[in-house]
Image (cartoon, rainbow, N blue to C red; front, side, top):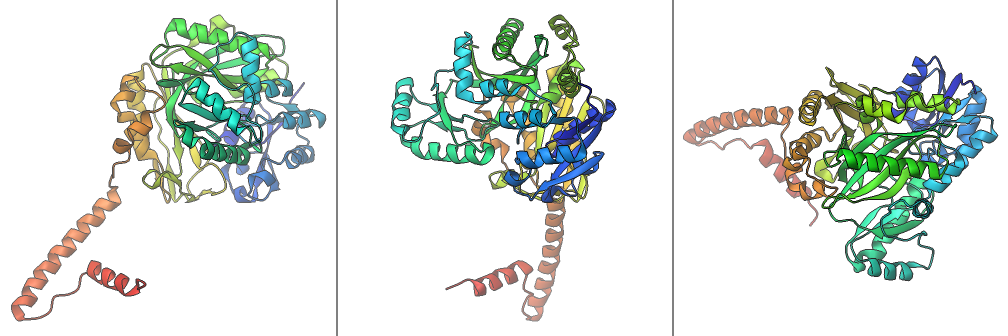
Length: 509
């Protein structure tokens, strides 16, 4: 099908990312926005924009009816879902087809096979793909006792996971049977809020786990290839913080084996488009197990693009139009080069338990220079809404080696300036300084173990200036106090003493 206009059913940096490729391809673009995003950068970066509802996601970005209505209103030919929101929703993919729209993603049948995690596990077992021991069905209402019994059989620790989504939402590590009930309730609530589906399943937690994923691409003619791996083990609460390719753990032989398994998994469900097979790797034995397949483009796709020279969004659009894969597997192996690392920039306060810090960005200066890429959904003066994930964007770098890439990312983070809100930039710099990370010898528990080193207090330049001014003021007051005492006069009250006295008077008794 000939695609001329694409509606981007998402927001923020991924909407901008898709719009840029569409512009290079000569395609017109349609943005959608909620009331909270009326003035957002992605809205102003597209050719047309349509309001799809109030700030709440369920009434805007998750509303299939509103998105389809926007596509019909603007006479779009296709819909790109980005990631998150409706990107892995088979009902949405079918609604697009029924409305005569090309869904730039896999067919709904493949989404159903792989999008529902326990169904995907069953399918992979049938295909001979190694999977982590666990339940083959979500935990049903009233089935908590049987699930707890199963957990005892396979042994703690176990993982509770959302059946209908990923991204760390609806996921809980349980190390003791007494933690099971509250962890299950929390996982179900998070899954329901994030995906509109509260079903949860459980699986065995792997020792020294490393999270390694394989990017796959398949066309409508049956061609399927893999594009290398991404190491995503730097995680906080099961959400990725830093991703890199290639993995320091994966050997060439292991890469080939994981790539073959990922292609087998995609072919088992007649997959089309971009997908990611996620594996849990035992850090001690290098044994790998299929976790799930994300039936969409990943947040961390830029590192694959940097090491292959490809535009994966262009591939998505071309394949959705009916084109064949432009590369063979041999082409991939010939083009893979260097090392890339990506850090996710968040509007959050690490010192306050990573609490989101929405607000207006007073100033935003992004790093530049050789090998630096910024995928950012905001600019100076932008409002970071409180209604959505607080990710500002992604900072990715490429270099000839892993050591050089780490130093380049450190430099780029040092050049990144965000004023007006609190961010995790300083925290990311500390992660890169961890000995374990620099050595490539880490697992998904790295950030939890290093919390004390990562959350140490770091004074900003403004704080240093304030402390210097306070020291000068105090010195002057001490000099005056000495003169007053020599004259028998009462010394002046300091602002700190005055503030304390007022607070004491206001304190309820």
